[in-house]
Image (cartoon, rainbow, N blue to C red; front, side, top):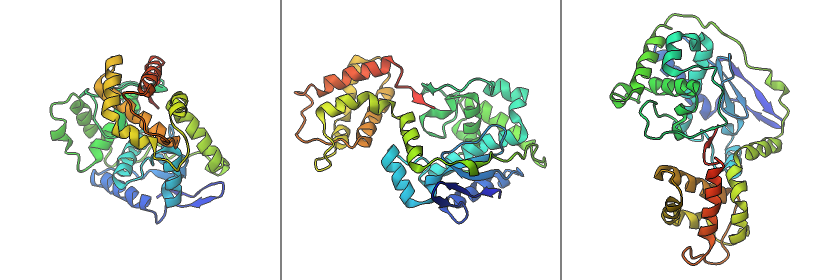
Length: 321
């Protein structure tokens, strides 16, 4: 199947025999059911991705060991692809990129007209229009809106999923045109041989330690935590003997959302998402409450609101790519 063994410093892990392999086999069977003779390369790396011009998919190392999944949860706050359904969605998405690379589909003029130009520079972040019906919905954060290539991969994922019922679900959506085009374009691949069999880069030279990996990853996704840390430190402690501050904030989420709504012109769904991210940042920082906090009589909510307004003004509420 093109599996490659990968060693991340002292980690020795394999795809073969894992629950991840079971999900890979499901996706490959879905491809076969569509009549597409394509078997992507799969290898273990530091995150999910499909490199340009490579007909394959990289998988994050933490998925192959329960203790590593626990570490990912502790360090990042969630385990991307950590459940069967979530992993299947990601695999279908990444295989969409891989099949694009394998057959050079992005060069098709009709594809460019419908999805946009692949050569458009990827943004560092994006702000989706949550109610838009011009894009399918597969992964969270309306990821299809991030870039034309992500729109293609998300559309492919919905098309490939045998449970999506896309002809009916997207019947009155402009996104249906994308699904219908993709359906026709991929039917034309039946019987075709893969044009590009390029292998991934030489990953044996990857020498980054697990500690170095998380240092870089946390820095990449910690804009929010760093931004709110002064507020958290002023009102909370990091003494694990006391109740978790994140639990308290979760209980007060509706009240916090109402305050933010009066001081921001963001739509309600964006405010809710922002507050949820603040709670996650608080959880990742392991903050706790030493003494009861009354939001109505405490300056905490005002300070948090002021920080949030500045956060929005600087564009930090956008979704990081």
